[in-house]
Image 1 (cartoon, rainbow, N blue to C red):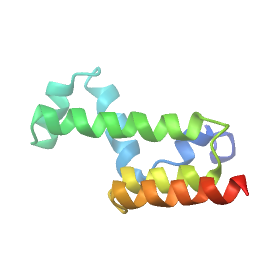
Image 2 (tube, rainbow, N blue to C red):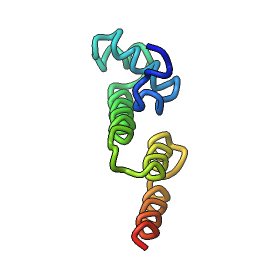
Image 3 (cartoon, one colour):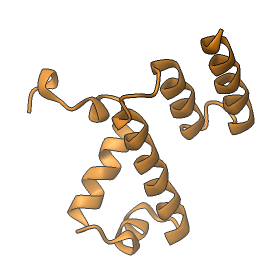
Image 4 (tube, rainbow, N blue to C red):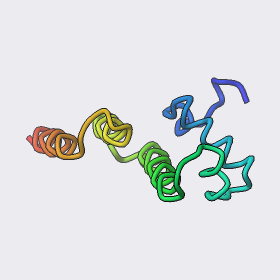
Length: 98
């Protein structure tokens, strides 16, 4: 699939996320096998998968403003703490209502 035909949810993922998806497929969806491949615990892989699912859901929600999507993605990537993300989103929503 060419880059211009890539779904928007895929465009929002970084190389690390794409590699995780590749490993997930190659391991037939076995989180235990992925944990073994990465040398981490099952709960660590489960958390990683949950965050990846959240990233995809954020991008698929067409009604959410791009700013809110960006803030949520930054929080999921641990580039912004969740408390600050929540404050930014709430402030944005208050401004949007004015």
